[in-house]
Length: 357
Image (cartoon, rainbow, N blue to C red):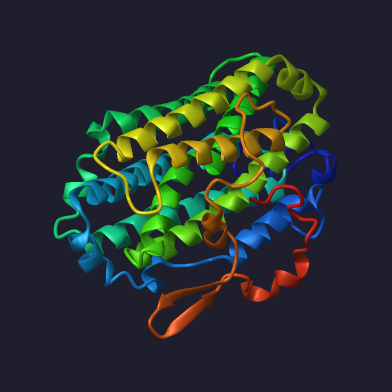
């Protein structure tokens, strides 16, 4: 595919994927304005890790018990690996086959914000650990972390292989469908055990700088979740062959989500193998993962095999996932509902209807 090309048909008449590539990046005429609104919403949430004061966290970390330090550091390692994959994979896998400017723009924005998340972990580590290499150097030697990373990467790798090699169209579309499902599960489920632990520390007035960064990351991930859920629905509606593939692979999709949920439950076991923390333990985290996993599955039309309560098993996490004020430095406050650049007026309640946490 050439970087610069002149298309034969208007982008308004093209499909999301596998059509002519994007020629002119124009956003005044959009086939799918909902994708552009998601991009605007994400851009309005721009933040820099260095804006968050984590100076107190160093002392807090020193005062944690050994098993609490294990929980905190292990979660950091896992988040670093997941966002290392997610920071590069959407561009590599999705951009070569996308056909609309609003989709191309969203994918690039999505990947950029994942790199902000990666940079934020370095900001945390620099301020807490005397030697950052103690955290970074051991990541790829942790089988509990690497196993999860490989499960994410394999769907991206399969799509990338289909993008560059000879393949039949149906197999190519199937690899795209499964990859988007995997991304949806990643954004909507895989981080939430780690998130809950970070916020549980902050509820105890510990590691509050880290928790504020995780709040920003969770806010971004909710937008990413909305985008993948939206794309899955648009793909089925737009392309009859993808609709057939979705029906044929329904059990594969269910198995994918169940495996993600079970991996998160195993991760909770690993975190709490040496002890619990006030307000959080292995069992309640497993209930939380099943609850949130079922919510994600139902949002894309899958049946959830778990029996879960209607109410959030960790109701106090809602205030961290939702909006509100987040103090990012001693002298300033971040208003999470504020949208920079005057784009807030373009976002209404219908933009992400049914896709919020």
